[in-house]
Image (cartoon, rainbow, N blue to C red):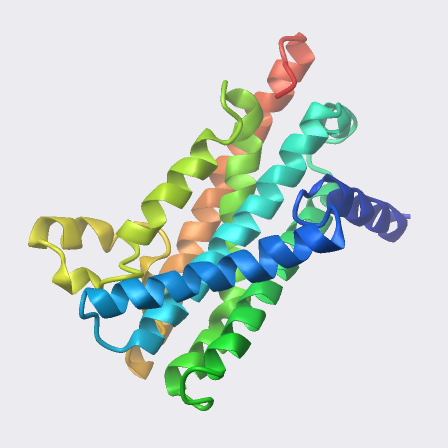
Length: 252
């Protein structure tokens, strides 16, 4: 019973996601657009004199994985809310894993797929067996899961705000700067560098160049951040259920 509902919700998630609407949309959204962004970041990094251009490209690949996973999750849930599906789900069950797990699965798969294609293209330009690329490949699943946690938070907050994409767009605009994807944080002014080190995803994206001894602590920090995002999302979900019960819920 649960598995059949899981499959139905997975199909629904695919239908609700704009990235998976058609084959052409899929190719443009998950392959062409990320590749063009990575190429642009490499050229910009070269113009700014950034060291290790392959590291710049890998940081942007991981950042793109986070953004695509979070965006896929948020877009699907916002579409479900617009179509009246999300209020029904929250009315019958407080937290329906058969609804939320398929959204997470498709979102994580979208991020990993985009990341793998980008790394494959990157190998044509740089040394195929670069240690940085190997580590970036291994970090893709962790990055996708962290992106899903962020997407869960943005998706549950979306129906509570006037602009359903406000939180997601804020993160998308802030992350390239706060993670040091283009220029490492140690090149920033000291106050900004100290501040951004406690922002989400800096540890995860910087772990492609971190010493092996620090890798566990970097990933553990992001695990804690993801758990915090999930807890905040559950609070937002509770507030949304209360609004639906009171009849004041509005579709995005």
